[in-house]
Length: 98
Image (cartoon, rainbow, N blue to C red; front, side, top):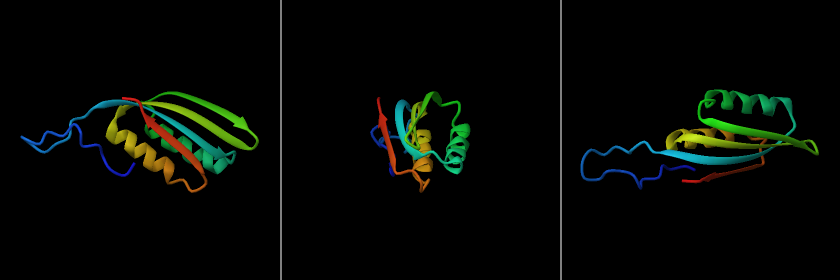
């Protein structure tokens, strides 16, 4: 997710994107490592108002996290970029529902 969706950009007047509320789903598979979980918790704390639910499972030395996000597309892009920047995370998927 490196660019912002320009679908809702007004091209006739001022060139500003409209703030649209989206619902996004994230699935993170991370090693069950204390340092990785601390990095994820720091990111989650920044976006705590937009994260509406979180489910965390521990299977075979791995942590699987499911998160639902509700907020602006810019905030969703920011959280995805921050989570994706954690080198230890090998599997990270996200889906914008609307």
